[in-house]
Amino acid sequence: MLTEFKNLPDDSRIWVYQADRKLSDQEVAEIKEVTEDFLIKWTAHGAALEAGLELKYNRFIVFGLNQANASASGCSIDASVHFIQTLQEKYNVDLLDKMNVTFYSGEYIAYKPLADFKKMAKDKSVSRNTIVFNNLVNTKAEYLENWEIPAHESWHNRFLP
Image 1 (cartoon, helix red, strand yellow):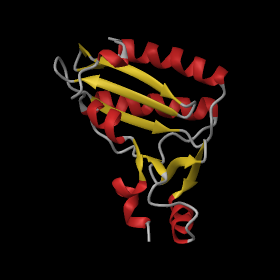
Image 2 (cartoon, rainbow, N blue to C red):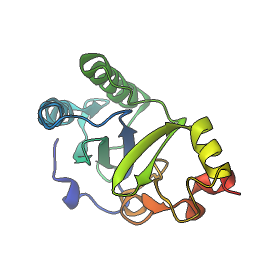
Image 3 (cartoon, rainbow, N blue to C red):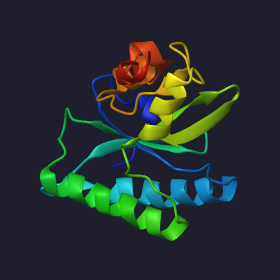
C-alpha cells in the first residue's frame, strides 16, 4: 500500500538507491510511476506493506517502509531488489553498487568510485566538510538527519587525511 513518504513514521526502514548518473526529468517521471505501482502491490507473506517513495535530485530512489503493521521479509526484499534490477536494465543505470560515493562538488552532485574518492581525499580535492550522501542510513529519522552530512561525520571519514 502506497503512502506519502512524509507520512511515514520516523522509525520506518529506509533503502537508498543511488544512480551512477543524473536521470532525466522524463526518466524520473517514468520511474516514479512504475515504482509507485510496485509499492502499491508490495507484500510480505500476503500482507500489504505500507511504503512511501522519494526521488531526490534526479539521482536517488528512496523507499521507506512503515514496519508497524508488517515488516519486510526476505521474499519481499528480494522482490524490491528484483524491481530495482529491472529499472537498471530499462534505463541503463547502476542503482545497486554501494562501493561508489556521491557528494557535492560545489553546487553539483558528483558520483565517483570509492577508489577515486579516496584519491581525491588524499589529494585534498575533497575535504572534511565536503557534503556526502550517507546511503547507509537505516531509518527515516536517520535519513532526514544524517543522509546529507559533512564527510567527517560519516563513514567516509576513514578516507580523509
